[in-house]
Length: 148
Figure 1: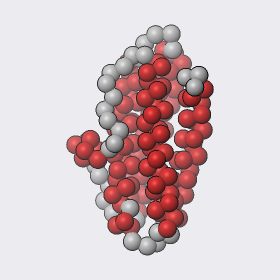
Figure 2: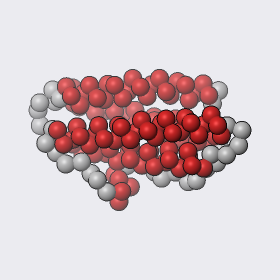
Figure 3: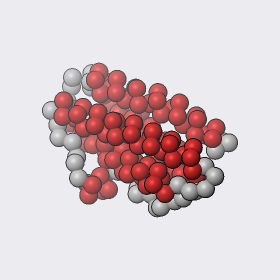
Figure 4: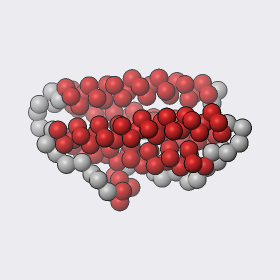
């Protein structure tokens, strides 16, 4: 594995993005109302549960390559390109947010996939590849749900 300093900042940005996204998903889960309540309440829980696992995987990956993960919400808010979501009760608005956030996460993961490939960091590269594949599938499903 080559110099990790070239991409540790990007890994921490991805970690921060997932942390903000996690909290946004919790908010969506808590505040959904309307005809899509039952369907989306369960889906949001599924998403935030999975996101929590990803957050832990990212932090532990950063630690395993000898670096320090960000660990404060104040740093996440500064670092993440994903912003805190205003409270929303509407299902279509929530799903549109998820699709948008996941597009941002995909952008970051694809960049890291390229960088970590060049750095011979197979562990991080494999993690990014798995996250990309998973997100591409769920984005297709969210687009279908939104009828896009």
